[in-house]
Length: 243
Image (cartoon, rainbow, N blue to C red):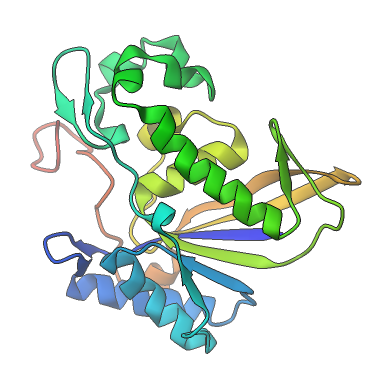
């Protein structure tokens, strides 16, 4: 099985749609994916993801086959860090704090932090991962601890159109990596494409391997500079998101 995860195009958050640049990005992505064999398309219910998905679905002739799932919308829950800072999204924590907490690096222990428990983070996280596992089971891959078991492996391609934070949650579960590490060290830019394959080295036992993360080659090929969204400043004081 192959999984494609796409982040939506450059967002107009105020109106929950795409900017003009975002529409250009989504069109270029659709040109790339129109050459792919995609069996199933799943999409977030939020406008910016649906607008991005629409270009690819049309290019593939699958406009009426897109399945919208509520659990694919952006991942977020109100949080209060130990220093009293209030945040909504998982990846806003300053590195000088989270890197000193060893539990943050473990794909199971990260949820045991007091501020995550207070925010009921585990419930939010399990809502997504349980739904993902239910869907994968429908395609023949059943989660057992850190592995997937399959009676009949397949070569289907499933495409997910969603959001940066949600993508990191999916990757964290599929690859057994703390989402804190993923969200702070990896940035999936708008319309970037992440690709995972199953590997079944022993019959009936599968794991997922990421063979491409955050590919924006379609943007460079189309002469469109990637958006800055999901990143913080490269050098302090240069005017791009600092804190």
